[in-house]
Image (cartoon, rainbow, N blue to C red):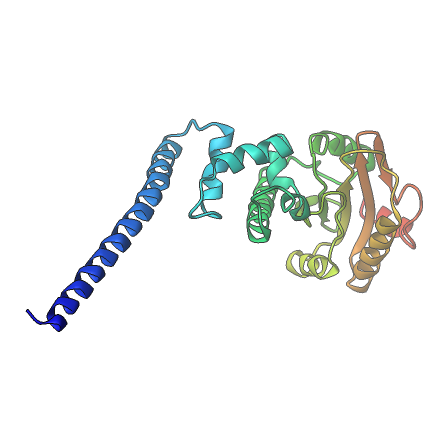
Length: 263
């Protein structure tokens, strides 16, 4: 056997060894994936039957955001940080990003799911008062918003005789305040064509005293309604300590007679 044949044989053996190492390495990788995949499959099967623990529901949700990682530890960490699933889903993106293992895209994913949950909850049957009357509506607000741990802004839609025929909800995902986008409110007015609206938002903690931002939002919404021939009846702020009414405090310009016309 000549030297060239021996050399070629050695090179072939080396290549076969390299391929075997690569195959084993890839096999180990697949084994790891199968380890997580098997766990995920079992969790999905249990999910279909119901009866998961809170951290397991959250873990299953995180599967979609973290396709190649074990999400169990992160689920426990998020629950420890925010208290419960509701706390996780309503946490603002900037706070989620501060949790070790949560990047920008995962934080956005979690918050998006939370907003969808909030919107779905707002579609549940709400038993409004039949008509907009101040004392009855205030009692309704105390019952409706008492359990809310996050800020929302609701627009109650009134017909020309003051009947409440719907509610539209706006949430911004912010931890401390909701600042309504006028474009959104404009779409509500165009889509539902109400004769009047009542704006309501809540302060989950603290008092009901309006901020400068609340004052600016109120005036912008009032002006938009006026421009579109819609009566801006009131903006009420609920807090556990009380309810503030812009109409009662006479902070809504040119509103008194128009509002009385809906009663």
